[in-house]
Image: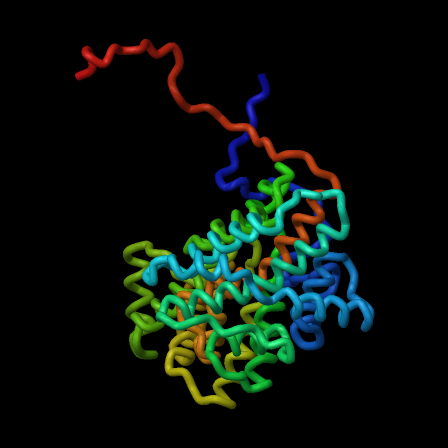
Length: 379
């Protein structure tokens, strides 16, 4: 009998072959379909990037216009889904509401016609179009207000900010938010993407695939870290307290949120871009006192842990950007999900191409030949 080597968390074990995205953690490179993330964040839009990820190539002008039109047409959600969301507890986390709502879409649209290209395209369009609407709707409904209907004359990012804040956003803010979505759209075989591919391998519908990935993203070790970064910066309170706070974290061996990455051993290229976006927002709309704390914390950690490859990841500066855009802290991870739907759908579509259901093995560490003890004799 062959004994397999156990790798906690499947670290370093390939789970799939993929042409969707590429990471070089030593050089700080992230590519979508071979295009550097820096170039996409500057020159592309989120919907164009989503098209690239899902269909494998940048769209023509006509293809992109058609795709954007379809997205606009499908932004609205059925009143029965809205009524269901109104029954969610106001104190519930938005990620839990999003997971339930994404799964509910399958009740209306699932046919599991996975060999039908028209069904696949409609599922892609519906999920990209409706997930932002559901996130914004829950935010307003948990405050006792009716959701704001989407506006067909606004772009993808601008429409979400409009539905969320009940006012049309400044074009610059919408452009920054669109770039943020592009940055979060895909990142190789992370936990939520693996969850999506495992679920997809059973040939269930794409709504269940996205719902399972949302549940995985919700954890603080994955998408939830950006919320905890803001809490950490608020707890530090001042630039002067950065190093004493850090020394206490070292003493207690606590995790430093927003730092370190399973793949990147240099500064995450997305963190670099997000830091630049944050500075642009502060220059236009006013400073954030916690930004100086963040910069000092990055400097201190680089001095202490840079030799170990511990640098800011995508979560470190994203929360500061989102907060300046008027987004509540507990919506940071749902916004991560809005963007990552593009990557999940790309992997879902790729998984269908050469599908084999995931069935990993295990290393058993329990007992053998244990006798059953009657309940009357158990002490």
